[in-house]
Length: 115
Length: 114
Image (cartoon, rainbow over all chains, first blue to last red; front, side):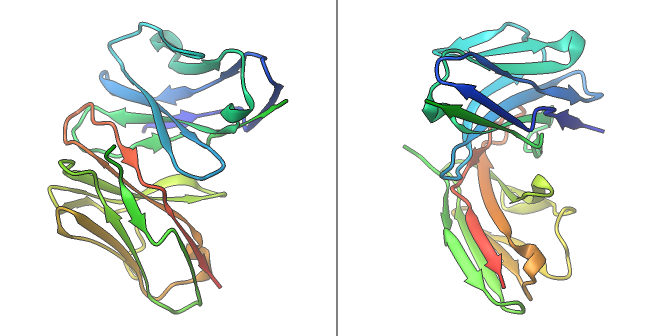
């Protein structure tokens, strides 16, 4: 069975601190896709990144970076120099290698960044 | 800037009433998903369609929920009769039908059943 675990329920940091959100997944598939979504206080779900299981290169986008390690089944998300606008719930999700199948979401990590 | 739209954004109703939520997927996307978000369960899949055909609705209480796609630009989720435990945020998402498909979410409908 597929499963996504986000062990950190809530994290609080002060502006400019770096913060890492953990994501551990379980799947028997050899090909799969991993996602991060952001849910700000306004409630919408915003797509951040998609990663293929055969591409273990880390990715950086501005202050955001993602560390994908197949050996530990982890796909962690780091925000560098956090800002108040980063305050949101962040969801990690897993999708199997079949067109049009649903996402399996973790429970989410609530990040609070204070000034 | 293509987006998934959902109506209504908020709905308050009384137990026993019928509720209909609507979703307009991004033009060209032929896979549509309905998810429900609650504090207890998190985000869970209710149903999804590919090319307007229902593929999986195992997450949906069949006795009261129904999902349809009357055409490529409209998906509906209906609850009849509604119950207080249906109170949640209902999200619609759409994506292209390829293995790597990224799902793009609508703003959600916040449903409160009194």
